[in-house]
Amino acid sequence: MLLEKQQTSVRPPVKEPHTADGVGMKNRIINTTLILTAILFLAVLAVRVRAGVTADSVAVLKASGMTCGSCADRISRALQGIKGVASTRVDLDGGRVIVGYDTKTVKPETLAENITKAGYDSTVQQVVTPEQYRRRPGGDAGTGGGGGPRCCGGCGAGDKSR
Image 1 (cartoon, rainbow, N blue to C red):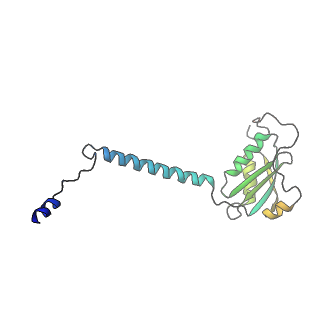
Image 2: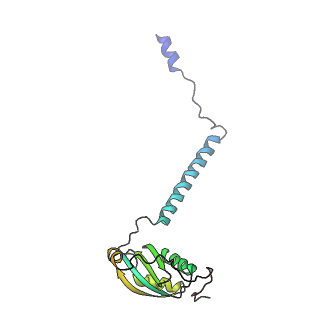
Image 3: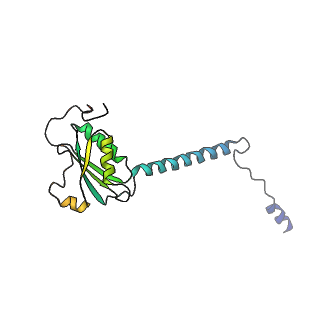
């Protein structure tokens, strides 16, 4: 019996694989770096997605100087860069810009100022709730489109900076 205990209690030393030459440590560093990079990427992506921005108000802005789809895109980009803006639609033919935004974060005057900074005259025409906007005649306007001549896009017409 005594002999059996001696045999079971003697174990060979356990070696970690590849620790002698540092390969295991290098793998850990690489894996940790990859995980941290993925977390950083997801964090940046979450900020860009604008999670949680809801529109509790709709501003209808009058914008003059728009002549083509490029003008509409320029205005949309200028507004989407503002914190608190949930959605934008540009009615090129009607000269209107419809912006859904969070009133706790941004004011309609700020929206008009950013359109002006993009090179187009702009004023606040009306501010309503999303429900009021949907009920009004032409509440689905702002999709652009429609007939009429269009330039080639990118002409810069209406751009005061040129």
